[in-house]
Image (cartoon, rainbow over all chains, first blue to last red; front, side):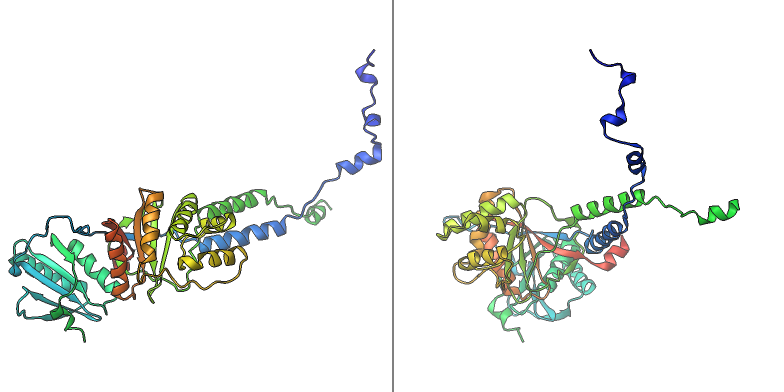
Length: 171
Length: 200
């Protein structure tokens, strides 16, 4: 037989007397300050270490390397339709045509480059711009030129190896 | 009397909501932060007006420092394991489990393949190791990395992350290596110029 519920002395079963009950009732105080300090320290660190700006990218398309078995697919271009940009260390030399050209120099300056490109593009149909970086060229300048090309309106441009004539221009 | 007792009572401030908030933010920043890969030299990327965002996945990065050291890395941890295994096989080198694990945690690495084991052991033991770049001269090791990376992940896109002061011959070498392997479309990592930011 089970005893009546009222008869069960709960405190006795749990071994608690009045004193113990008082103890249990006492509030537990945890000092959270160190934890908070740490949380904020980490927060500050990660906030300062995070960079939200993702790098941008410029897309480049290059022609696939011709295999020996391929028939020659290169299309000849009229000399008069070409414009060469020789990228030197601190300036760009440019000329029209290939044979005995008259060369000009400009600085690595977006607006100046844009101006000569626009001029050449307006008086030549199907202009082909040949970009020839010399070994002394720095990558940032190449990127600048490619960047200007991308919005200059010139439809055909490519990076090619400098000719001997171009290499002689190296100071 | 009543007034006095009120003043004496310790003011209690419930800090729990603030702590919750702080930890929430900590978690957020911890999750979103990606640490910059360790490189012996800082890479200052050149400015341009390009506005294409780099993909976050399926990306292989070729880093070039201004002295011409080349580093290579792909984005996925599991792919990295397989990549190292494959490149090792090409050179007749086998890497053990701890070396593979160690490589899978490195975002970008630039050591000649014969020193790779040594480099990874140094990483495991937390010993400093000077990286010297992937050799480009005769029988460029870079092409092995690129070819195997494409075999591991055919959807891989390539980004060239080069310092603005790098001289052209190194860049040319990297371009040509990509071209030879049939990678005709790739990205140059640039930083948006400040004037353009102001304009938009």
